[in-house]
Length: 344
Image (cartoon, rainbow, N blue to C red; front, side):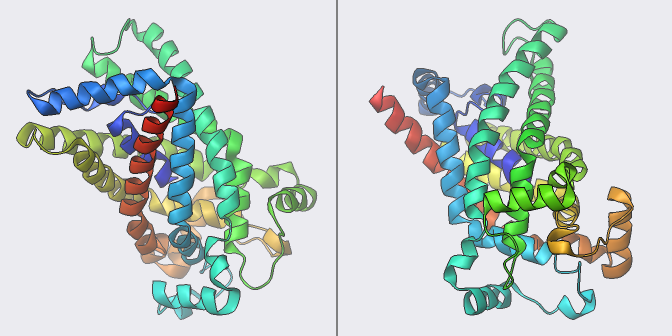
């Protein structure tokens, strides 16, 4: 959940198609920096919608693959307190858990669930991109905004609301793949789900179609705050940076500001992400249900049994993957844009 918003912010900073355009947080400055920004905007318009979408999808897939071991560690830590005594898990460390995975499951297990993550990225990106453009047009009509840039406040409102609605739409449509990813990544030595299709069939048969949407409430609840925090932190820091150091590289500014916004959004919304993961695993493999009273009940039980720190179980590997994830997706996206523009 956090990563989606962060990727949108960073790619947007470099000239993305998926979240509002380069102009939303940019400060126009004199000299080379201004010309560089204009060149990037022209390059974006030259490659068109489909190549932009392809570039974003490939960038997301490469980034997810490179950081998959940290993503799996995050999930494993998040769900540790479900079926075990939480007090016995406090000594677990990232290195110990990674060593256990390699020792018991092999090196390839560090990427368990990554295939479904990549399968999830392409439709998610496509739907978010398409939905954002549609929502943006509708909101512009409602607010009476004819073109981007004529009203800064209205533009910000359109981007935040449109981004939030497009995120909710994409998450709702592709949610079953996200749930399957969690269940595959959470498997340890006992393999209950043999793959994506087998997991979808098994969950539908044993838990009904509704079983494919367990925990979606926490996902949708976190989309708005996640995007709002990411965009506001990114815009604020980026504007301040460029106003004081306009000669700095656009890539460096976007990477640093995107990383900071990622850490901020992860910190605030991580408890929702943890609850989402645990609710996704409710009833998996025939296990008994633990959180029977919905989202609020899940929060209450975690706090009672594990304390407030339990809501942040797994936050360290999440932090560790923020910078490389954003750096990889940004650089891959820019490279793909260059390649596709050359082909055209």
